[in-house]
Length: 298
Image (cartoon, rainbow, N blue to C red; front, side, top):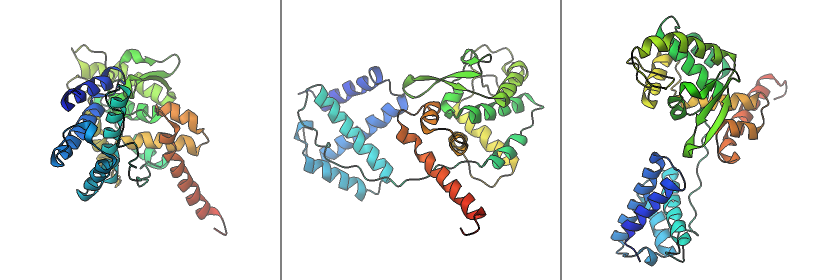
């Protein structure tokens, strides 16, 4: 049997080449599995084939004792379980000691989102008389119109936008592409920004990316976070927010206004409908608030 470090390298290559996982996801898998290797060393377990179901349960207990969050424990167990599944698939091992180990149940945390009135205040606070302001307005409009992730937004190229059909080609997780429509507010904001603000910001730079910073270079995810912090400060809202809240708001508002779950799943780029279902809890809460506020015998 090959050395475990060699097997880990081969597993990482499998995630890169066959599964098309992002570098961030791959790094998480690698770290989780290396943490498990440290546990093996502590328990004086030499080979991966020597790990038993009892060892797997001890590892789970140890993670709890080290006060990891339930979400982190679930991810770590899942990473090692997936590693063993790969070893089974490659006929390197014939058992998966983590197959019978249950991950801890996660506390369901409802996603934060903006109410439509709050978003309206945010949109109106943007000063579009400057190139940066035109970019910020386009950034806000595109993210709310499409519900795309911050990383997806940073990667949009000019050639990804089809103004005639009002759709954007988005490159999502695992390099999966999808077309997402946008409305006339985003259309107008993009048109103004591309023809005016972007030209002034980009100056003599040449690159295909839609959103640029003050130096004319492509806007990063960190840059988008910074812009949001500035916009919130200017809008004077007390809400502690992050750009992902725009995505949450997009999904919540669609469902509140009658969109079906499968359509919202496709627009968000979720691989399964279960990831989208969390927003139905938000809409239920919204309905309960309306009911209690307006029903005479609530």
